[in-house]
Length: 401
Image (tube, rainbow, N blue to C red; front, side, top):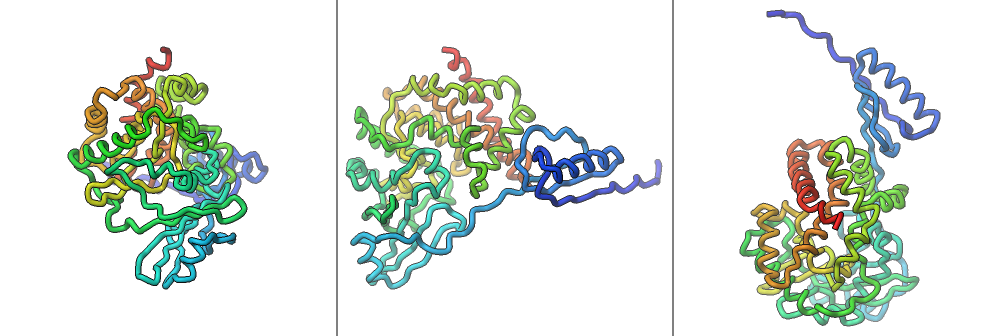
């Protein structure tokens, strides 16, 4: 047995704003030098802000892209408060900005003179990336103002107390506090999920046959927030998430089998081949457990900013993306959906909706599968990716129908 020690690996860390595929001279210099050093046995790590693009054809050179973050929201928007908000401010005992700090949606938590807590949420045109990509003009406030949310059936609710204009195209919604009853951070059992889906089913029945308002997001726009056209359009904006999705599109051919990658591109190239076979109705658009509270026997849906015109199966397919909230596997969720919907269930629409979701979710998962620093999260993301690629293989024959 040899006792000789292998030579220590020589490592170099380079921090540079520019690096290939960035075409700047500085980036090209570091690109060439890194390849040269790698051939000499160095392990080179590049930390860069340059946009990821294509496969890095340089063994031994590892590119780590750092994405900018949206600046923290430090103050509420300036505008013209309506009478409800003005009265609320006049009687407020305490008022503070809340949220993640880097959210694109400004929110305030207000404690009223009576001790009650309410939340003020602003819609500012063009400030939120999802709003830009789904042509949102104040969708949530309009749904409340025009009475659409009053049509929710028994057992389904919303928290909005008032909505009013704030000037210059801005809106505010004022909502009661749902904090004690939120589902965030909880894991639902199958019986709990059956009640959850049954409440959604009652909502779909209440709006069956109606003509949804024209300011709802289209199904194509809802799926398309992760497509290359959206990623390209938003890349220079400060929100970081779509930059990770851009990285996923770069990784698609490297990580995903060709038949799945080709099917994903087929959907993106002509989404109308799917959407023209779907009958639009009124959907919450993002009715995942992160946007739900349970108050007694009532399912309370909040954050209606992605309300969508599409069949219920579109919402059912979206719920398949949230395995972290369930104490059962996603195939059991699909079976439960079919059971709750009963004779109203449209299996073809469901399969097409799953394909549509997969076309964006597969690229969106790839950066976490490859780049995320936590091995447990990478493994979880890989499990999700494998499930969605299996969905594409199961139903891709429908793309040729």
